[in-house]
Image (cartoon, rainbow, N blue to C red; front, side, top):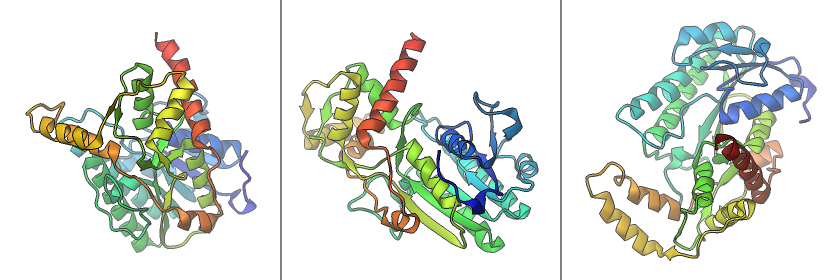
Length: 335
């Protein structure tokens, strides 16, 4: 159980997106710590969450948000749309509606209700699809793609509301999340390796930033325990690791290791660029996918760590094993 300071014991905390991958981790940690928590999401209450603590609401409809913010002192806005791996013509509008307009609705309702502190869960994707050094919070944002653009625009909308109302706003730009129930890229990589479909593109020496979901929840807990004012932005990530460390960690946990087949990075980029020019929607993003696999993705987290005396607790090997163990159990349940 996380240690909680007495100054937030009387707070009433609303967590949006509480059925989601991260939102549920935050809710579980807060509830286990004895905090007064109210959860909300679009769907029905998920298992393990008491109906007494759950209110169904659609963040894209402002009128559904306002009633559940009564007497709230803190909002953790974790609701959002992500992990759309087969985008369609409407994906861009969905990202805009849920991530931008939804955030604006919740932030505006929170400010009107007198909420003191609004914590917005954002993403390092706002900086762009890759880094050429360890990016800190002063780096200019250059979002690419509808998801990253919608997260950046959500930050701008929430900032405007906070500055106008005086509500404290903390924006946390999280690295790629992983852990049990992961619907994202690490989860897809686990499945690819398990099915024997993985082969090396490049030598795996490029670095990536990951964050175990439990550490992300701990970071949010640390944030709400310190009185906040104004608008603050923080990068949050575990120490960077190489792609080879990630793949080998998954392989060890699965008991399966990829064949030592390796396509040189330069050749993979050349071939994927050529194939991406073929008028086929399945190949259109191939070059960007290969490039993203090969590039660096590293962020400077010292500002957050120093401000909150925070360090991640879950190392890469243990975090990957937990996710793989979850994957094995649920794979068996599906078959």
